[in-house]
Length: 407
Image 1 (cartoon, rainbow, N blue to C red):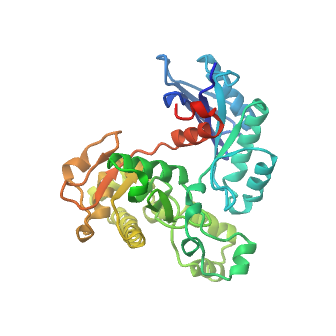
Image 2 (tube, rainbow, N blue to C red; image 1 turned 135 degrees about the horizontal axis):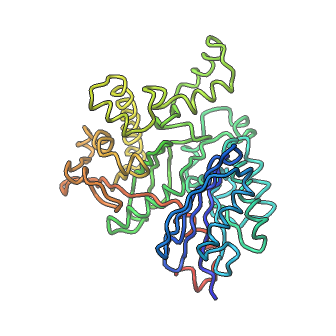
Image 3 (cartoon, rainbow, N blue to C red; image 1 turned 120 degrees about the vertical axis):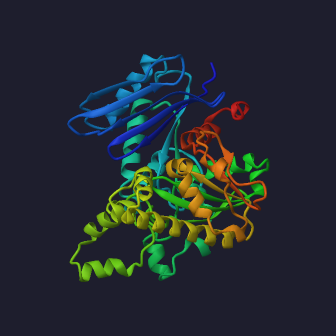
């Protein structure tokens, strides 16, 4: 029996998101989420995606990630998809920060674990949880290849002129301070899918990818290679996000310390959790913000305008970086579902060859599509992201026998 299944795990500090895929045809067999791990009552939602099974949900105490993964294994086993199955080829793990060292998916061993652990100071919210998920999965299936797919890997192709900050170079190197970028699996998948949508090869296409969710990032992709991205040392830099500020003058931090008597930890919480849209208007759900805008509320209008202004600045900047742009593509929750955001982001940029067709832009669809008019020099596209599929494909390509890698 050929093993063609890949279990994709995305372990957060108090959650585990998972999908089981069959790479013989890239079909999804099951998906689910365990959340509130370690709290008094945790929740597991499991959805079989084949065989007509119904979604199941249960609430119970789940003390840690080990218990969470055992609960996931139990749910998969109920559908005949147990992780002890000989059909399971590998487990693919999303790892947020891979630094400069990890430029591609990597089979996990002790050396990889040590390096991911060494990167915790630059990813204190993410890498510890990723490590916990990996170690737990390795204990459950020590015989199975475990593969790390790094959010930062797609961005390691950035030239030094884009990746370096203009600070003392010895200090930067000593403390690993540079721009790493994140959402890399999404940017990789979406840029490649956009080329396919245009009927071209990735190496023939220049694309600006706008990943707009609660976290948001932009990337400039030249011929399938990332040359710039908006997130930096951490996911805080760049666009206005749901709860993150994005770009601010660094002196704001010193000012808050000196004049506001705030600690570094307090400022960290302010910029990461109490800023962005929620800091501007009290909401981080773009649907709710647009409802308030449509009702004439000025606070929501200001938040929306700031969000769009920053987005346009990055579109213009990355247009300049690329020189020639074939497509601008919107993805993730806001990018895929908010027609007003797409319309506002390109409004006034007609001289750059950008426009949206109102009728095409207003259509709700789960399919990749072009929403610009035929006369537009630059395509405006909407491409649903699929990070789990990207992780599964990268994982399977690494561990499958050569004859099965194009399955």
